[in-house]
Length: 248
Image (tube, rainbow, N blue to C red; front, side):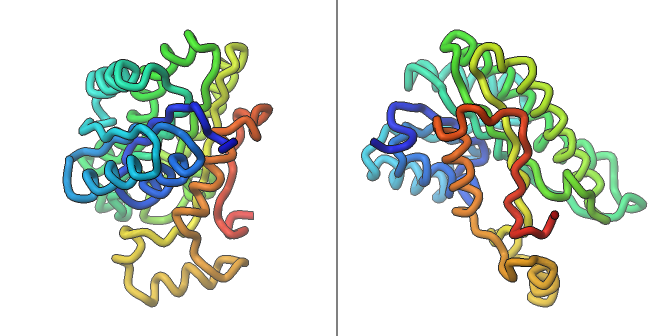
């Protein structure tokens, strides 16, 4: 039996990068997969087809995770389409990196809304379903810079640190109903976003990593499989660094 057989998962920001890797990994482990993104572009439609080709039920939803009403509506639609919701992966996120002296209020608000408020929005919507089921696993995507901070990323670091505090609080609130909540703190992961960095910047990051390589989206997805499955049935309120020992 596959590790996620019979479960339904929702991954926000699921059409590319880490979210896409999680969606595919979940489908390969037998989960039915709902994913969301801001627009139904080529990546969105191709992922939906790829997931369905793996023999599971899969559907993409166009939704803005930073909007409270959008999030509630999407979760209601997912429950209507799939019948249940067992795993929520709050993966949607953006960066607007710059030094504080140059950061605009808009850059601050946008990152906080997309990265942190979205976690509140989706968790509040999903908990209604999970409380009725008396089961569920919530996985929140933080970052090593949410643990240690980073110059030029005060907005991003604050949003990801907020996710950690939220995760620990929700684990305490919902644990009595068999609902677990954990966070993952990825380090330097090779994605479309990091490919935009100059080669010398990427090389400097890799030098700081004891495993001497950047991580892959699959490295993060494998930890999500663990946290979404019964293998982690006694793991809640934790932050798991996926960083090659960079943050140790």
